[in-house]
Image (tube, rainbow, N blue to C red; front, side, top):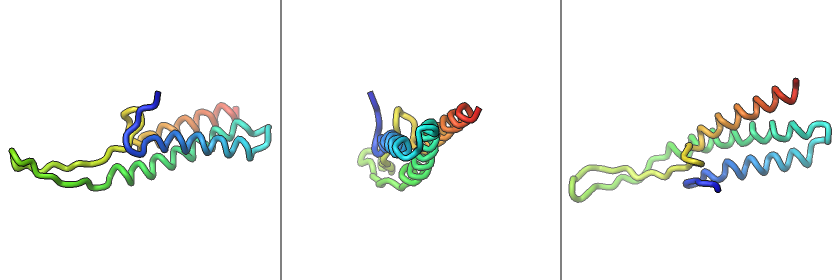
Length: 103
């Protein structure tokens, strides 16, 4: 079961799409590299767009009872982890797969 907020599901969709495309493009001897490219591609996508979307300014609302300002922002996350941090996780997994593939 996937749990996401906002556009967080795009991290998994990009990961799946890039792995699928490179699995079809690369020769059979290099099929393992499709996972490396997939995790690196999804890592860059998640880091770049996660930072962009999660740092947007929200709407400022004023609480009628207290008079304090409250900022309402959208959250883009997957399994309660913000998208930009999935970029780091995906890149680390890609590095592990790359090291295991090359050795």
